[in-house]
Image (tube, rainbow, N blue to C red):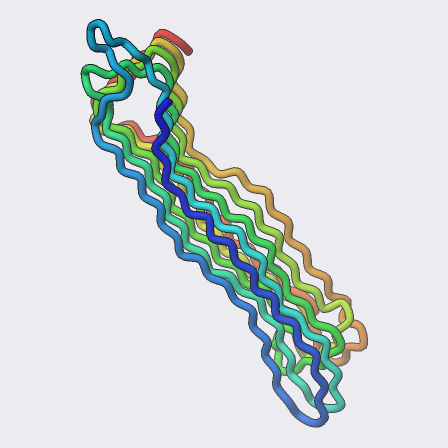
Length: 273
């Protein structure tokens, strides 16, 4: 068994809690922010796996995998008492950019390769929330605002000669688990937006065969895509509010692409399924 692995697993926690009181006109902005920029690259050239040499025959199973995983918890919260005109804004924001690349250039003639699993995998798990209690908010500002931006680029690329006595699995995969919340259930709002969530996600996964010849006695599987498990929740009652009120705002712009690309002239042969 041969394993070639590269990985990054950043974990971030940002927790901002504020208790304040104000008389007269005042402004308070509380901002909790966490950004992850992570790149994992695994480049594998043409190598010998196992041995098909006379009097020394040994089969090998091969795993080539690049993993890029981020785990974040970001919170911004405040309890505010105001005796006059007051602007209180509690904001949680995340900006993530994750790039994961696996390239593999085939096997040498004397190899004896049974099964191969070639993967680039990206995972983003984020719990992000903003809360505000007891504030009077003016001038159209959000009492609680959650902003999230996620961009991923995941690529698996195969080239060269691949001869296997078993199965080949090639994957470019993204996994997304976002829990986003904004809560102003106990805040007073004047001419303001009580709670807001603004989320922009762009996830791309590509699996490419270029100048490749793949022959297997078993099956061949090529897969590119994104698994999504998200939860978004706004709580905003506008309790005690007067004037023009927009109590909540939810904006989500999500784009997901998954492509399996075979350049012209590829050879894919299998005796399996």
